[in-house]
Amino acid sequence: MNTEWEYRERIRKLAVCIVKHYRGKGPDNVKVSLDSPLRITVEIRGTLSNLSEILVHEGAKDKVREYWNVLRPYLEKEFMSEAEKTIGSPFTYTWEVCPSVHGDGHIIITLELQHIHRLD
Image 1 (cartoon, rainbow, N blue to C red):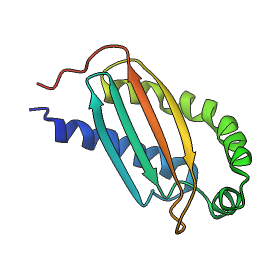
Image 2 (image 1 turned 90 degrees about the vertical axis):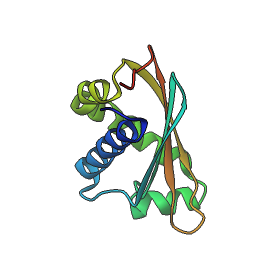
Image 3 (image 1 turned 60 degrees about the horizontal axis):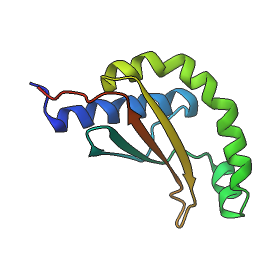
């Protein structure tokens, strides 16, 4: 049986795997929200390196965004096929680096699915 909880958990585990791949350790927290049948939001805390945290805190969020723009094609090449299989649909996505308040800077990824994933 594929429940909503199981679906969110599969997406969460994939996000943890991707972060471990490029950072060498897992994120502090991954929250998956099924906003609508065609939209999923993934909030990942603990993805930023100490340097990235400092840059964001000092107002240089654009520098961190430049870094992610370099990393993005590599991660897409490595994980897009697995991501589409896990999500159950081709998708587009946007991401945003959110400033840290107490050393917990995070990234929010919004997925827009091309068709509705059925939970059987």
